[in-house]
Amino acid sequence: MSAARRLRKLLTPAALSVVALLALAPLSAGERASSTGPPARASRTISLNETGHLHLTSKHNFTLNEQGTATGTVAGTIYVHLTAVSSTRVTAEVNIYSHGASFSGSGNASYHRGSTTASFAGSMSINRGTGSYAHVHGSGLSFSGTIAESSHDAITVHVSGRVSA
Image (cartoon, rainbow, N blue to C red; front, side, top):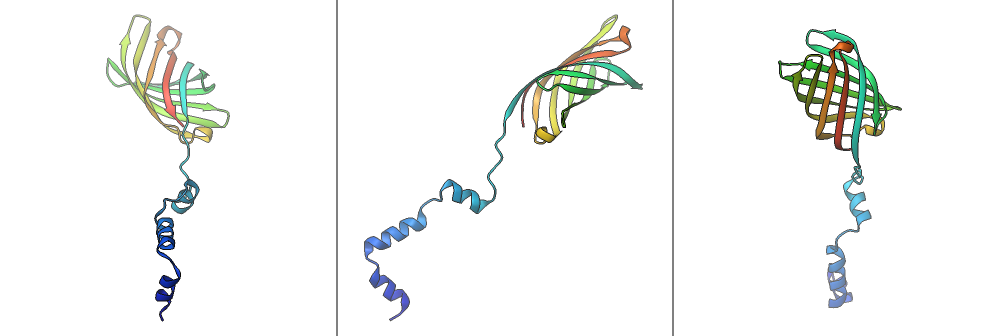
């Protein structure tokens, strides 16, 4: 008698049903994670509300390179490269460094020049980070500020919105 035939004689129809159900049962959460690789990293949401007070470090053509202090959700040093791309639009690259971590992003804004100050307002995306912000990303953040031309192009910048980290 073959091994398969002996096994069928030993197992009753009820036992075969239990074996079939066990074979078809879904894996537990722990077994799924170990069979498909490591579990996904849980993301956290951060509400950014940053204000930077910066001073001009250099100027090249239509780009102001600024450095200063960021206060708010993430306190630290902030660098902004603000470029006038037309008489009504600016682009910016923003980098904030805080206690061994950093994040960077870029923005686009409308620009209005007054007699002694200029202002800009638009949106920004955060697309890279290091340290505790290594996985940070977000888009549609509010990005605005003013340029005090009488104070050697000192700027104040505001960034707010929600990002995932």
